[in-house]
Every structure is written in structure tokens, then in C-alpha cells.
Length: 101
Picture 1 (spheres, rainbow, N blue to C red):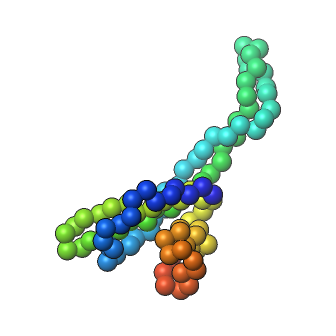
Picture 2 (picture 1 turned 180 degrees about the horizontal axis):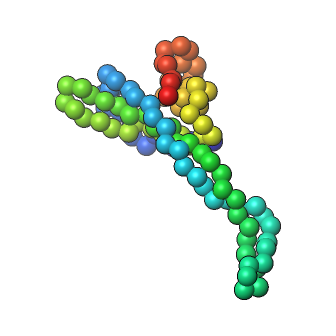
């Protein structure tokens, strides 16, 4: 997993934090070469599924919404959500957050 580092500290903490996952596919090279119909050598590729977890900050009084952080992972599971939260708390966040689909 790769993680985007925080560039700017939050000025105010949002009262509501929502998590969402976006599924995507990514092409990656296998390191092998194959011949196409025209006889040219082409890099062989394969498709890999992935998930981007996003943490949204929501201020209900003003209607303001902001993307707080995101992380690329393999799935939308509790372990990935806890890893995203751990980046904000600086350690183990315990049972303070519930991650569900």
C-alpha cells in the first residue's frame, strides 16, 4: 500500500468523518514479451483489482465537505480502514471507529 502524506494540517476538526471505497483496475507489466499479430514485440500486461479508501470530513452546520486523506489498498476491509485511521492518530486507534460497507 502507498500512502499520501498530509501536506497541510487541519485548521478545524470535522464533527463527522465518513469513509468510502472506490474500486478500480490497474494494468501492470508482467516482465514478459509477446508477439502481436503484426509480428511486433509487446510487453505483456495483466489487470489487477484495487481499492482506494477515502476519508471525508463533513461539517453538517455549514454543509462543507472535504477529502481528508486517502490510501490505496487491496480491499475495503476493516484492516485497511484501521491503517487509514492510524495515519491520523499516530498510533493504534483501538475501537473508536467502525468500518462497514
